[in-house]
Length: 199
Picture 1 (cartoon, rainbow, N blue to C red):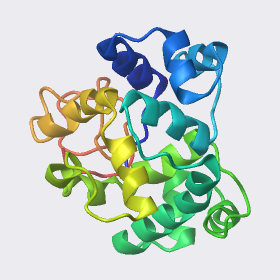
Picture 2: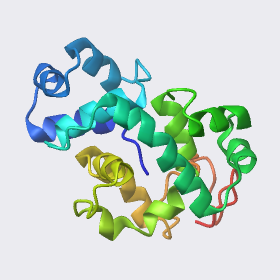
Picture 3: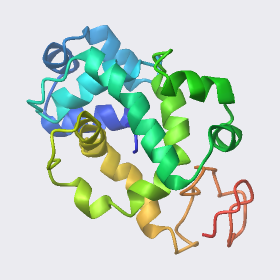
């Protein structure tokens, strides 16, 4: 799952022709909060980001913030399990503590977006293979599927995916598709010096 950045939110909002105030009203948050999210001046909780994304997607899902907060740990645990990571392995590659992942999955903590973004960045190979299916509405009423669909379909996120589409052409790649390392200092690399990903 790819979580949108402040730039993604700004891009999607402008494509929709919305002002920050209009988006804030639709999302049920304040305009200053939208401004801070767009400038990456605040690290919102996942339920706040979901409210903004749902408003951008004109979603009628009506999920409550508590539902998003309660479902996100299941989304993370499912993605981690399907990709074969243990909590310890994911913690090591994502640069967080294993107890934090455990607390997120036990629903003991409402994680910040940056923490989840870092975790999902290492679980992304799972969602890359599902890109064709993501564009359609979820076929079941699973909260996890609804949450994934909302985040994957914010318009700004599609621009983030472009480097991954070019991924095999090393002459056009500026960032590693796995760990997002800036590859411009390395002359025509065939693998990422940080994570070893083949480019």
